[in-house]
Image 1 (cartoon, each protein chain N blue to C red):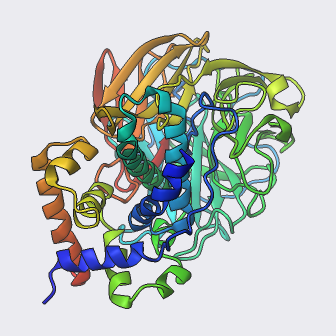
Image 2 (cartoon, each protein chain N blue to C red):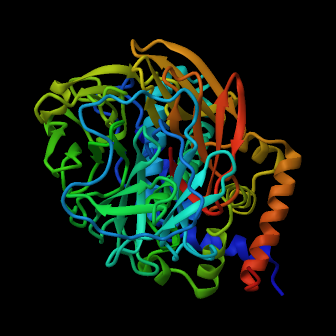
Length: 158
Length: 412
């Protein structure tokens, strides 16, 4: 378990950072995912699929966190303020990249997830459909709408 | 010109490499072994309250009268009967103006008709406060409590603003004003004492206000205030009984106004079951929450990524309704989220499971005496606005309840 974490943790943290824009939260999500794997290790029908399990768990964790942000905003918090990358994070990214990521994080959660799976992890539509639990057609339409919305955001039309 | 897809690829990779190789923190596995409880995440409940009297509020009047001394309201010592059907009126919290940005965080209270969703009165907080952040109601369908804060544009309020509680009364027809807003003698909570407003619950007779403090600089606790005097009692989870990230959330009262159901959770379990709904006897003195309460329902070990969203005890105390987001296996190692509402007896037996594709993060807002019908809300899917839709579940069917535009939470 620990060896698996040492090899793959950074990759999963990177995925969560892209989804959430928040390194500490991303680390928590990945920690939780591996803790879940630890608890369920004996239930995995094929330990070789552990990484796929963790990836699903990380994405679920990101979804849950995004929902929690919305719930928090319903209480009090300004989500946009939270979702914006920190100044420290901004300093590490070129302005162009920061602009794209800020636009990405304004998309609805499912569009954001589909785009990250497609254009960061380079998963196929079939794989994305399996991960998201939707049809390949839904992946295609979600990705298409997400790219269109991202373009409009970057052009300042939204 | 570089395509949007290419720009996205480049940006994602640029963000990824900010996480350098070898910078992952050490893995912290559960201390209690593979059977340790899954972590549950935050949830919110706006406790609802039903009707006893029929009202006819017809005019739209903004009233922000701050009263001191005796407040109008339900008579203490009486146990109002919970209504069999949804109350005629509710109070929703809605964004002020047209939604454009999360930075516009001010919201007002709207008294609205359950049948039509039409607002009949709008209430704004008295200065210096400028937004309401939580609402809960009594059984008489005319007494509510609102929590107010002061925020600046673009500012996260919850850590920075004090919280002031007000009583909102819906006045009888013919009154000079449709509503009256009165400051409660409950102390103003200083900034940072309520890290996240996880829930308030006004007792059925309107004489007690339960406020949960889940985390932050204070230990997780439930405080019950007497609305007439501001006197309070506090029950805490002792620090040596909990692991990381403990939380007390989702308060809801039985009709007797004595027993209060709470969702008490912890990332790592301590000596007692802390991942469950507990029933607190508020007639007992403050102190140790675990000593003053007993387990009602233990969260089933459904899946490591189950998110428990809300809980609501039925007015007769016979059932507990809970909502959860449950990852559903798609393949042997991938999952998809599905929302469920579970109905448990007060003995912890699961009697009913409902699922819906309508939304995910269901919040339970009102229940009939035995829980056979209830009102729930969920955030609109694919909208990162936080606006909710609501529905009544009765006789095996969901029926939408219209809400005023841009409603974020509501209480019956």
